[in-house]
Image (tube, rainbow, N blue to C red; front, side):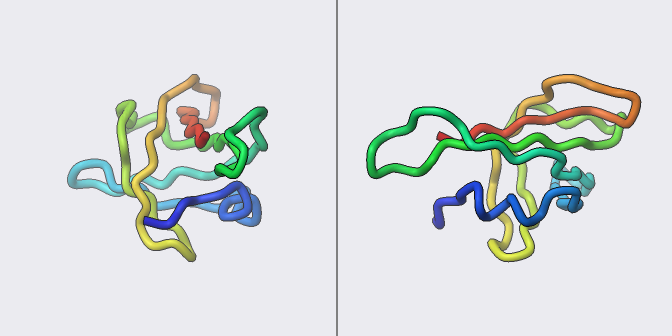
Length: 95
C-alpha cells in the first residue's frame, strides 16, 4: 500500500471525496490540510486533514474508503470532531 502524504491532499482543498460507509456513499469535502509537528526521522512527515460532511448520515469513528483522484480508494481512519451550521467535521491524522 502506498503511503499517503500531505502533498497528496494539499492540491485537493475544497474538493469533494466520495466515501463509502456501509452500503451508501457520502460526500466529504476537504476543508483543511495541515502539516504536523514531530515525526520519526526518515519517516512520513505528520499531517492532518479536516473534512466536512452532511449532517446526516453521521459517519462513525472508523476506517472508511475514500475515493482519491490519483490514489484509488485508500482506507482512512476518521473521527467526528465537531459540527457547524454546514455539517459534521471529521479529522484524519497521519503520523
